[in-house]
Amino acid sequence: MEYAYDDQNIFAKILRGEIPNKTVYENDHALAFEDIAPQAPVHVLIIPKGAYVSLDHFARDASPEEQVGFMQALAEVCRITDVAQGFRSISNTRVHGVQDVPHYHMHILGGRQLGRMLQG
Ligand code: 5GP
Image (tube, rainbow, N blue to C red; front, side, top):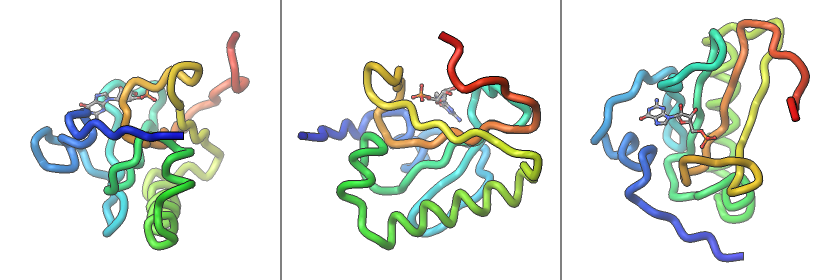
């Protein structure tokens, strides 16, 4: 599969500092920031700093260092947001997954009871 990365997407602009964000955590390989339209008391987006369009692209092509850095960022987000009672991680992907922003991101949602996984 070909993955075509568009560097004009909104998260690429955030990574370049062209658009502000409320940073929760950052390391060499990942940035975590608050979602602009939160759907739960905790709603953080974690993105790799590399140019990956989706979870499957990241899993296939990201280096071990990038993948470890991303997961370390996830651990720090969970610690910082104190989601001890649980959370949901979501990576919407392409058309069936209803992905709006074509730069890989993982949603971390928590802070309330989230209900069952799929509504319809
Ligand atoms: P997707 O539907 O691609 O999985 O989710 C994209 C997410 O990005 C949405 O939850 C949306 O609210 C968030 N988002 C879109 N534009 C911005 C922005 O400029 N800043 C931030 N912080 N979040 C954004």
